[in-house]
Image (cartoon, rainbow over all chains, first blue to last red; front, side, top):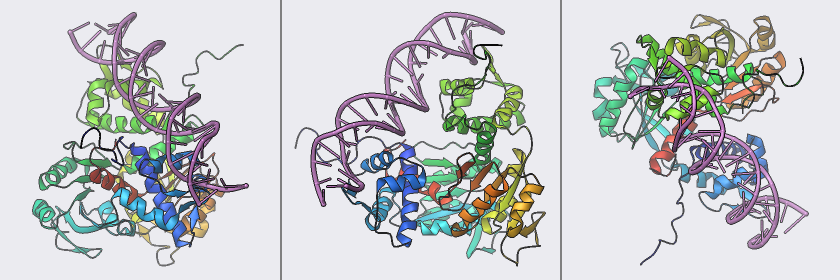
Length: 220
Length: 220
DNA sequence: ACATGTGAAAAAATTCACAGCA
DNA sequence: TGCTGTGAATTTTTTCACATGT
C-alpha cells in the first residue's frame, strides 16, 4: 500500500466541548429510551438540551453516520453507539481515595454504576475509618494505594481528600499506572500529560451562578 | 449628559469559559496568598493552571486593569477584585433540597462557606429525615420550600434530589423567586431563561475522562 | 415532506506580537 | 529588563443552507 490510508474514521482532534455534549445526548437518550421512545430528530434532541439541530448533527458527524434522513436517530441504536464512542460500553474499575463527607457520598452515588463505572476500592488515611465498611465497600489503608490499583487493574482514580493531600495522592496514582484522574479537591494538581485529568470544584459551580446572577445578560 | 456613556467598564458579553477560568485564577491566588506570596505574573499564573500568559491577561482585561507592568499582579489586590467581579464579596444565602447521600455531603462541604456561600436551609420529602439535624442544620419539610426561600431571602438553590423529582423542585424554586439554580440531579431541567442554571453531573465527568483515555490524543 | 450530513460562511475565542510603562 | 494591555492575525467553533436520501 502507498499514499494515505483511505479509511481512518476520525482524523481531526475532537473538541472537549463536543465530548461533553455527547454525554448530555447520551443521558437524554437514555431517558427517552426508558419512555420507549423509538426515534428522535436532531432538532428535538437539541432543543431539549438548549442546542441547535445543526450542532447535534455536527457533533455526531465527528464519529460517523448514525441518523436516517426523514426519520432522525433511533434511540436504541444511538445509545450504544455513543457509549462505544465514550468508551463506556465496558465496565471501568475505579478507585476512590478520601472517604470524608464527599468521598462517602460519591461511594453511594448510583449514577456512576449506571454509566459503567464500578468503584472497586475505597481508601483513607484515617485509622478510625480503615477497616470499616462504607456503602458496601471496605475502606483500605491509603498506604496500600499502589498495590491495590495494580492488583485490581484500576484504570481511573477519584480524589476526594483535603486539598493539601491531593497532589501526593495523584502522584501515587500515577506511579501505580492509572490512566485518568478525577480530582474533587479544590486545588490544581499536576500530572504527566499523557494521563487524563479533570477537576471538579463544587464551589466553582456556585461562583459561575453567582456571576451570572450579578451580571444578568452579560455572559453566555 | 448626551451621547454614549463614556465609562461603561464592560460592554461586550463575557464568555462562560472566561468566568470559569476566573474562578480558577481566584482559587490559585487564594492559595498563593496563604503562602504570603506578594505578586505573580500572568505567565506563572497561567502555567500553573495550564493556560498561556496572554489568556490570563485577556481574561482579566474584560473587567479592567489590574496589573503592574514590570511587576505582575498583586495577589492581595487581585483576590478581592475577582471576588467582586464574581459577586462573592458578600455572603449568598443558599438552600439545599434533597438530603440523601449527595445532599448530605454537600451540606458538610466546607468549600462553599469559604467562597461566600452559606447554606441557610436544608429540605427533604422523607418524614424520617424531616426534623433531624444534619451538619448543624435542621432538615425542613420540602412542602415549606417556597415560604422558606422567601422568608430567608434565599437567592440560590441547589438540587440534589432523585432525577424524577428535580423538575418539580426547580419549578418551586422559580416560583419562590430564586435567582439561580445548581442542579446535581442527572437530568435536564428547564426554567425561565432569566434565571441562571448550571448542571453538575458527576458521572459525566467520569465519561469525559473515559473518552480521553480511550482516544489518547484525539481530544483537547 | 422530512430530516440527515456536510461544505461554506460567519462568529467567537485564542494566540501573537509589540508599544508603553515601571 | 520584565511584564502588562491590547489591536491584529490566526485558529477554532458554531451556524447556515442545501444537496441527498427515505
